Structures are given as C-alpha cells and as structure tokens.
Image 1 (cartoon, rainbow, N blue to C red):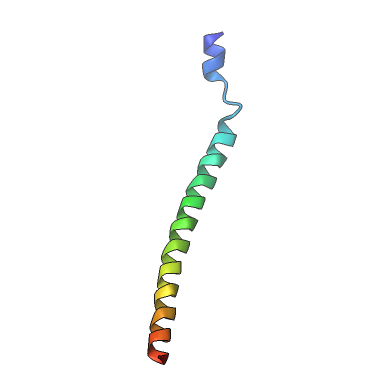
Image 2 (tube, rainbow, N blue to C red):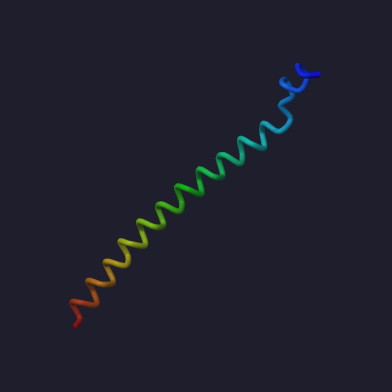
Length: 51
C-alpha cells in the first residue's frame, strides 16, 4: 500500500502547472510594479516641468 502511494503521480501535472502559474504571477507583479514606478516618475517630471 505504501509503495503504491509513493509511486502514484496522478496529481503531479496539476502541481507543476500551479507552480508555473505562481512563477508567472510573481514575475508579472514585479514587472508591473517596476513599470508603475517608472511611469509615476515620468508623470511627476512632466508635471514639474509644466509648473
């Protein structure tokens, strides 16, 4: 029974897809955060130059 349990890989594909989705989400959040800061700085500079 223990051997059968340890050799069962029925949920392995689901776990791999979940890890890939989590990694993509982390990368997307960090990229959007960085892009948001740069965009904010650009608008601040434009606003200061217009004043």
